Image 1 (cartoon, rainbow, N blue to C red):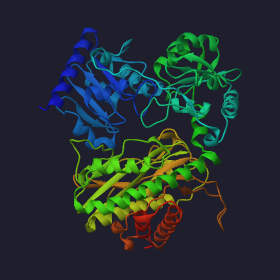
Image 2 (cartoon, one colour; image 1 turned 60 degrees about the horizontal axis):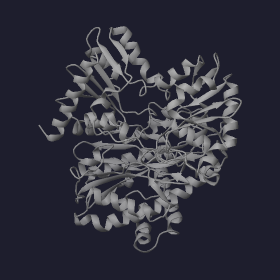
Image 3 (cartoon, one colour; image 1 turned 90 degrees about the vertical axis):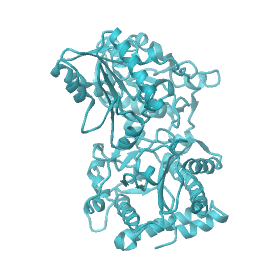
Image 4 (cartoon, helix red, strand yellow; image 1 turned 180 degrees about the vertical axis):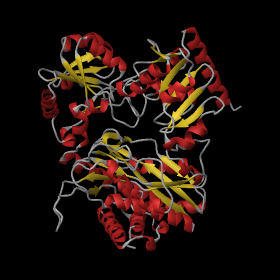
Length: 598
């Protein structure tokens, strides 16, 4: 047994000891923290500490004699690589769900513990229903049992909040509050409890440094239909330097005292809007103790935030020119050095970050760079470490998925490049993925179209070849906020209508386990409906924002239709035009060749 597995076994054993002493037969360990962040602060990453799994989505169920690690298809290979299958059954959704596994494996009458601060109203519903059906009990824990054994748990720290200037936001916080209050009144509610930190950040034009790669302060807010809002903060958020600016927008209260303060904000019988997908059981209980009536519905902030205004869209364009130039400098550097076989994944990802930082406008990466050489590229959310670091060797493919956080926009781009001479099979697979990418980029669709309605556009060429990929085709993107935001997405679960101003990724892929991965990602903005000559219904479409060449060496022109080839050449002409103004020397010379017409 490896040292890593011994440590995981010891932690699992210690947790079971605590559970037995607490009268529990099991415990649920979700990935999410009390704010349901995608990137969980170190002090709250209980799942990673307990199991070793570092993916951004997952959960564990610990019973007396067995345990589950549940992930999704993005983490098929990562979960098996990081988690000991002697300790945990590694299962994937949707084939297995947390509730169904617990129901199938917990004994009749078993008492399963959970932390109400970590489970949302919507997410806990299936577990509650299974418990009633299968005869096991659920018990809320006032203190998380994992915390009792995590002796080296990092301290909770919060950085000062800072103002996101209106020159980037495009709308004042007061105007946003007026819009939200109007929406609250239209729902017949007395107020809205905003549980998601990114929604609070958008609403009040504030940002923070509490979460890695995402400029968020971990705060909540209450917005009454009439009166002043309240921002719930933690020590460290408010300082003499920012207090006056925050108090101009809202009253400031201690987040830890939300349950004590809330009864004074919402009287008995008051209708309070709360998003069941974001509000935890603990927060909902605090509202109920005030005798208020919950209206469970998505809050207006999420949709308002997703539809970028003209200033935010222009900021995104500016950020992508800057980011595209940095990426092209990297790709030129890579082409020059990779054939030697001396470069590796960590060296490459560090170099790309260096080029981004040389813009002098990078605030942070928007996520941990996925730098996958050869077979590591087939791990969808791979993260290179000293133990897994591979050389970029001739005859292989290299996948680089990365992004930056800039004050005027958030970027996310993936390119797959050939190291040396690619095989015919690599070129065929790459071109099939590219055809799917172009299928989304050129899509036209009427108002009301959902992401699920066009997801298949990206898969058609792959499906025709008997191939597919397990992840969604696209996710929403924030504006100097989360690199993954909802409600918009292009996927089998994309039930939200795409609306003008939304930014989504376009990233079909193909992954040959043990050999290579291919993913081609641009960000694009949904455009306003326009009439089509000879048509009857105005159609929306996509404006591609990302600027970077696709690897000519991997494209089989004969597999592209005339329309696809025309799109590709037009796109590359735009890349040359927009980036030539900011590049020089070897990078400019490389660009002119890499983005030449086919």
